Image (cartoon, rainbow, N blue to C red; front, side, top):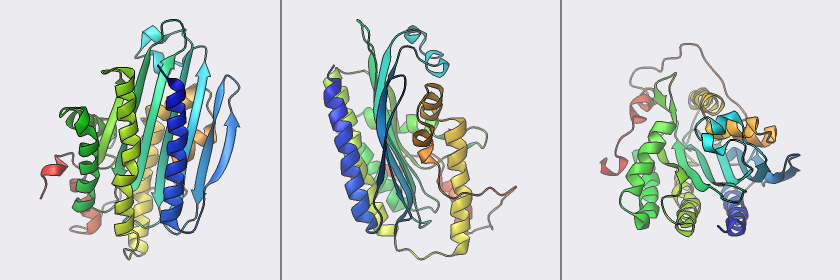
Length: 299
């Protein structure tokens, strides 16, 4: 189990994505906060604000450790209770300025115990949250997810695509957060090096999936109606991250850095009681579009 190689990859991934996003934005640059955690470990959080394309883009690397896990982790894995552990990963959420450019999220991580008989697994994935339906964008996103998964077996993409649809679901709203992508956890189905290779495939595939959509939609004209709808739909993002997201809960319960954990929150958001879009409007089409389906079979 070569955790040094995983850490080096994750640090390099953060650097590569930052350079690519700065180039795509063309205006703003990332500011870095390096931090340490009293119980063990630390990280570096990078935030880009008020860019030409991205209203806020946050990407963080962390490697943290401890002597025992919080209840949120051991409730589903009781065999981990009382065991020393470490976790490392890269997580990002990008909130574009233009409502026609989707919000996106990526996470790739490794968890392991650090005792004489270590348990380990990888987790992560990426997902896309559009505010306005664009079938071509969604098909491209899922085609990249399919293609990067294909070398690992024909069952991998449909399994992790379905898991993503289930995970990013707001139960209290009975709606998905977006159009999905990939989500996996407890990945130890293959030897360590092959699991690490899949994590790298997901991390390396993210820019191939996202940047063409940014380039295609960044200059789409929009007005105040579209902007207000974007802010309203961002509220769903906040609701999911604060109510259901396991990474947010783990980070807060394990004594992580709050500012870094909550960097996924959008800089501006609004809620409106009982909002109903105008019939047959672009906004009204979103609910039907977000229904999970086989995007690669859509025409």
